Amino acid sequence: MSDKYRVLIVDDSTDDIHFVLENLKQDYAVLVATSGEKALELADKEPRPDVILMDVEMPGMDGYDTCRLIKNTPETSAINVIFVSAHDTTDEKLAGYDAGGSDYLIKPVQPSELLQKVKLAIKDKESRTAAETDMTMAMETAMTAISSAGEQGVVVNFMKSSFSVTCIEELAQLVVEATSNYGLESSVQLRTAAGAVNASSKEPIPPLEQELLSKLKDVGRLKECGARFIGNFGGVTQLIKNMPEDEEKRGRLRDHLALLLEGAEARLQALELQQQLAQLVADSNQTLQDIETMQQQQKQASMQIMDGVMKELEESFMSYGLTEDQEALLLKVVQDGVDKSLTNFEQGMIIDEKMRNIIRSLERFSFA
Image 1 (cartoon, rainbow, N blue to C red):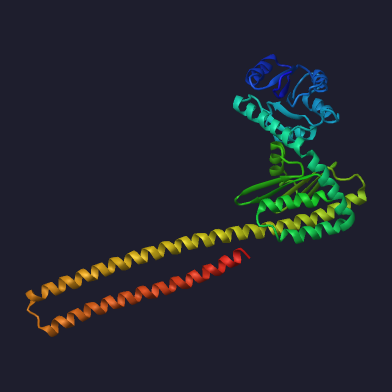
Image 2 (image 1 turned 60 degrees about the vertical axis):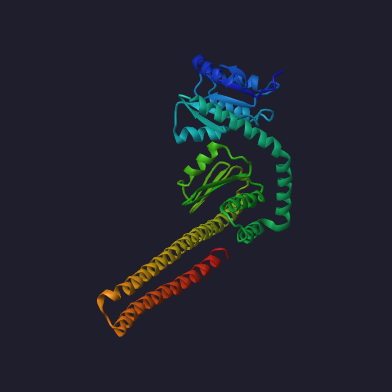
């Protein structure tokens, strides 16, 4: 038996099968099915494939229906399915996501993208396998938290904990953990001017799910579709995957999630402001250092110039035929000018120190 990871190609086109096979056969053990029915048969045999490349459009059972059956079968539900389609639309990708797909490839497929997607799917499988024990323990802990703190206590605890997070990544993870206390699986995306941060109750989050989160921010504040719940508050978007069927419980959780996401948005704005303020402090400090360096250089240059002027003036007195009193008067005029210039420089340094005190105050506030 080969030690290579197993990839199942499902496609009714011999040309497409040959293309994918040629690009994968060196690194993977490749299986081929030309129909959805044959794919189900191969997927259920040991050793099962690690990844399935599923053509969307096939006669009879199409790729979406085949994937649903694979995902609804406990023995094959963990296999990552990458859809391959010529249609690059949000509706198509949403259909693939609903069917249980983990990623999407657009025809004509590029070899480098094909290898990258398969490699990512293998890595995802390894991560999920390693995390199964941890997830079981986490769910048990979550159910204990529900019993002890109650549903409203989850929101209160989230609000308290949110003030301790120091970065947006921590806040995203805290939203997912708080939602897990309700027994809900979720993914969340936090967006700032610097970019988007994603987190999920089942890490790593699939690329298709990350793309959907970016698109779902425009569907409205609260939206439900079957077991899915989508919440949008400013830069925070959350996708719940398993809302309960009980309408009373569903309504309570909807209210709790709205409060939780509203609090997350407020904390996100505060964190973004802190980051902007920290950057402003850093930029101001650098600018002030540059100004001080330039002032020191100007002071040295001015003193060198004035020393040269004094020296040339003293050397030229002999040719001017001035009296000692006249020489002393001219030297005093020049020296007074030098003293005034230095006094003006020192006043500038005092202003710089006052600016530095202001920056120090901003720095303490930005990290408070």
